[in-house]
Amino acid sequence: APRQQLGEIFEDLEPKLLTLCFLVDMHDQSRKHRKQIEGAFDVLLRVGAWRRELFGGGALLERLPEGLRLIAESHRDDPEEAVALKQASTPAASQPDAPSPTALGLFASG
Image (cartoon, rainbow, N blue to C red):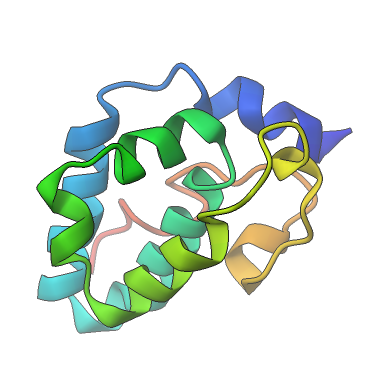
C-alpha cells in the first residue's frame, strides 16, 4: 500500500529541522512555488517523526507563515498509527505513490 510506505520513505530522512527550515524559507521567498512547498510540507507532516520535530518546542513553529501554519495545525493531532492512511488534503500529496521532492517540483529550475 503506497500510503503505508510513506512513513518508511520519510521517517529516517535527515536532517529534519534543516529541511523544515528550508521549506519555510522557500515559502517566504518564492511565491510561485508556494503550492508545491505546501504540498511537500503536508506530505512530511503525515509522518510522526516530522511532526515531532516541528511540534517539539522549537522556534520554527512560531515563524510558520499562514499557509504552512494551517497545514501544521491540521496534522497536530494525527494519531501515529493512522497518519500513513490519512486521505490526502492537497493535490500534490494525492499522487498514487509518495511523491519525491523532485516530483513536487521543489528542485525544478525556473
